[in-house]
Image 1 (cartoon, helix red, strand yellow):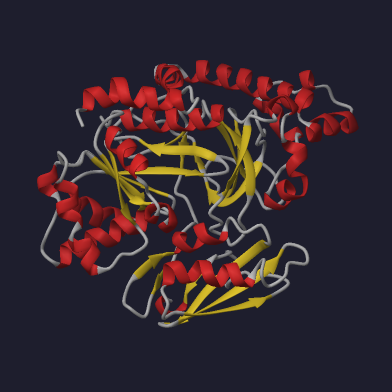
Image 2: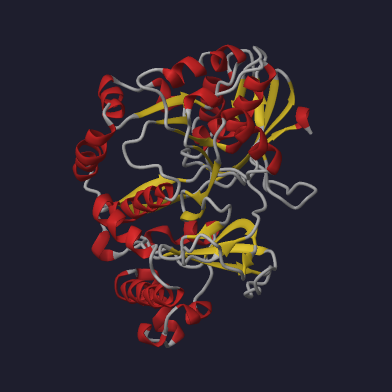
Length: 450
């Protein structure tokens, strides 16, 4: 499809039909790139005070918290007072979910579920405004690299169920948006051998978007066959959802013939940081506030690694304030030569997802498993362990007194869809999912590759 038509007609129309204000927000966010650090700081304080005032007035939990604390929201003076508010984590949200939704947004929020990379999925509420701001932020950051709305995009992504049930309407919609998808969950040599022709079809491909490990696996597959994608003239390969390690970055750039663009965010916390052409990871400080905290919740100075807590400045349907992600990183004191006003994030730790192998020789990305399990209401926590080429065991922590039809059976049936009929799938209920030797939680663990 013609890029100009997609950028100026079909894409804006698509967003309006979905009741999202992405295009006005994109223009607004692009103007922020020219701010000074001082202008950014003032705007962030105003946005935070607006969010807190809204939460104190409209959100049952925050109304009660301010009353018990004996505080007025006007006493919270910008982000310098953020530390006076309580921290959130997944158990906190689960226990109080309905009380965290704003009264004046009820009927306009909808539920989403996280992938659960730690084995602890979360159901939470979001809204069209927050979704619009996140997409606008993505498009703004891609423009730093010369990638514009309407450029031809191919994703190595997707829930295996979503891909398997695409109907004619979805296919036409994607075509109108210059968007195509390749499954990241069935990485057989036969499938990957056909990817190059797919990327050349329909006018070619401008950029790729996918899991970091999947992009790297495809690059290594091509390199082993003495092939590359240099002839495609890709503008970039956006790596997301996982830790991007140096050796993966190197092979992707070498074989795909384009820069690797690093995106950091999560479904619950939103888009948090994005790399610029100078190689720095910029915190998207006009959209989120990021704290780096010690184990006891104290703020750490620049350069010290701690846990990330995020406050989403656009989360009015269900305000997400001081939410602990479980990921670890450090803030950097220096600025970037690119001239953007946004502060810098140091190297991230965590979120590396294992890949499972099937008896037929297929490779199934761990996120394909997480997408199946995250929507089961009876499941609180889990870990999928592969200890043989034809066997996985799933440790389950139930939510309440769930029966087998609510827990074990849908787990086995769901995993059989992605792992195939030859895989033996056993389940075992436990009280607690133990941390591994590093202290990290791990939702999908392929012991054959350790």
